[in-house]
Amino acid sequence: QVQLVESGGGLVQAGGSLRLSCAASGSFFSINSMGWYRQAPGKQRELVARITSSGQTNYADYADSVRGRFFISRDSAKITVYLQMNSLKPEDSAVYYCNAVPPLDWGQGTQVTVSS
Image 1: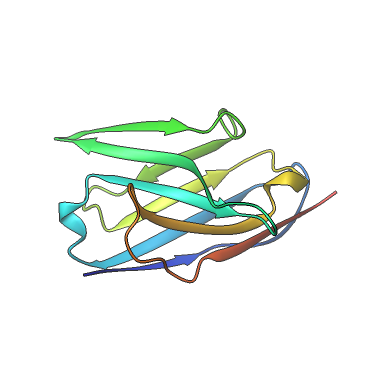
Image 2: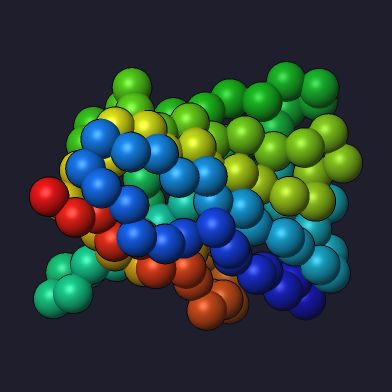
């Protein structure tokens, strides 16, 4: 069983940056593909960034809405996954979750609010 704890959210002005962190426990090493998802009020949860490990190489891909502004990474021990968010926009406001791709049990998430 994997437990995921997200942190790093907060209130930021448009154009600002935040770095989210996701600490994992449990059988994390068996998960090659991890992602950051977000859910805004009244909207479906969406996958915005994914990182897939193949040997010593990590591959990242992004939703069109965040490509070039958000960057996903993970440490070499594959214990922590990060999401660097730059040039934030009000439409990025949501609860952000990390999870496997496809997802397992959800954590609490971390709230990101971008003011205009």
